[in-house]
Image 1 (cartoon, one colour):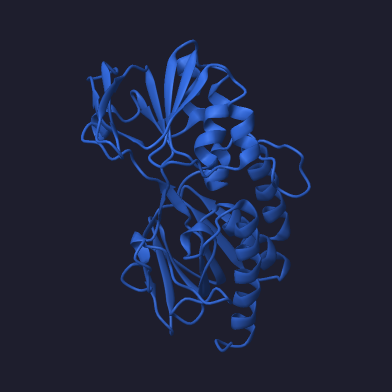
Image 2 (cartoon, helix red, strand yellow):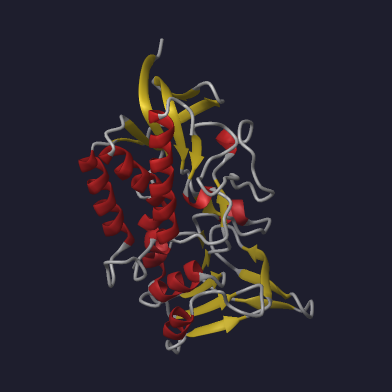
Length: 311
């Protein structure tokens, strides 16, 4: 028999949006739990250097996450790290979250589960994942001291990862499927100051030949259809993210891309259930917009709870 616990607010996800929501909820004296099935901080923990967050000229993602976590705990919110949610039941009348050990009944729920990296879409990805195909430069970059690396992607994540990897790699090729990179110009300029960094546009990787190591990389030019063979020791992939909404797909209205649809108050189609951060449908996804979402969601949840279920 599992334990049962009632509370004011359940926040699912302990990234930037979830921690900000917890901070505001704690300061509002709401009995709050933040559920996170991994490390608190989410994707920000994997960021080498954050230089666009107000108040910090430069700070590591891990340090920023630690500061946010500490502040949220001091506000009075509780954090349940590495607690796996087995299922949820969300409707206008009740919000139930069932974990390995406990059944939680909340008055309101904020979903801030974020997103995870999309995999490189090639047949060999599963076989080579973690061996020579990687998604975290902080975790695996040091393996490639003095070796050749390919970075796949053209956004901020890819270019910032390539910048970090310059401290290890002998040579880096940035491979992007489009004609233009999407990353901030200042980051592009900084990266291409390095003479060992080159760029391959309008190109996709179609196959990676090898078992535990890379023997050959096959690419295709999207404009001409021409195939080309490349050599590298490792591939780091940054081709976008997939929203983590599998738990909620039977209850909430999702966009075609799988993001949760909300209004400007961050309300979902269920009363008392809100969504914040990268998991919700919106145009801009940045640390600062996640903070914005978290604060709005918490304030709206407080209003819902104090209004006895009516906004």
